[in-house]
Image (cartoon, rainbow, N blue to C red; front, side, top):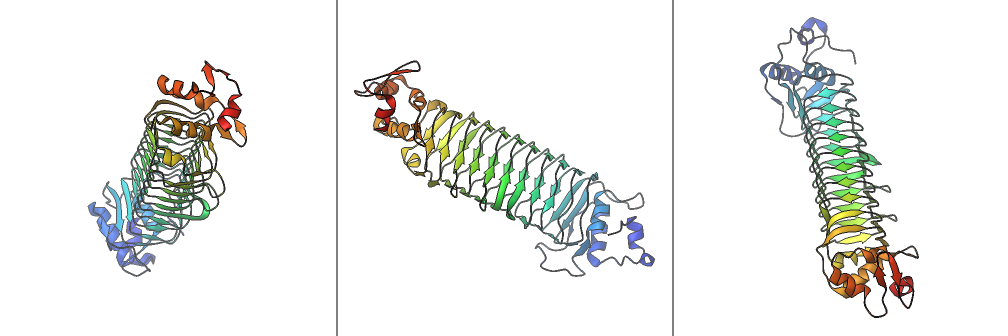
Length: 395
């Protein structure tokens, strides 16, 4: 689509642009610094009253030309049918951009764009190409529906990424690709429905990642890939339903990892991979609904361990606690129950590891477990007993 040279040229009858009613209303609103509300609901089809060319929106976002008289506050539109490709690659916008409850015929191109803030709440798009996007403020996608990939690879977002109640579907690919993304605030996925992998590998997130009551379906792949991500605050998986692995290997979580009420199904693979992760605030593993697949905590370190035996018993797969360390235990101190938990986590794929038995933080409980008749006595990292630790623990 050819570039529109100016708003004046676009409105001039002799130039043949023939502005729609909706386009004229949007221009007037931008000149007044107001939002153009065509409808409070997302349109289901194009009409004279709702159709706006993407090229016009681009011109308005860039601030137009000197003769436009546009307000510095930016572009605000609700209820529009956006025709064509909104191409802002390597462009710098003026003010905020709100395109809420809109229908996009094509996926916008925002690679390397620089904007103050972007609001696409309630809109429907066939994807969003926004790798290396720079936003000084937030990206709002609350209630947004995407039928293609949301690409934020290497993006730098100063505020939050709000996907509350969003529907993201890449037909089994990568529904949200935030690899290497820098996010100043939090990622909100509460009650979102995602089909395809969420990739946050190597990302830097200053706040929380909230997946409470979300439905994450990796469609044959990982539901969440958080390998090597750094999270300033907590990761909330409360009430989440995940099909596909939750991959947190090598991640750094500054707050809690909360799994209460979670339903994790590895779909034939690991349900949760926490190998070498670090959780400063603690692991909350209680009232878990179901774990289908292996739960790997090899070499993971957490502050507090808050658990219940019932949740560990719901693991339909291997539990690997080899190298798992925690500073304080806030679960049950029932000795037979802890022995069963240690036995469950010390054996993985037919191999015994004594390390889980050395990590009990309370000396009295540690002595009770390791000093029982017929058990393994410990001194530092050496083990003695009338039988090998492996045979006793296994038996």
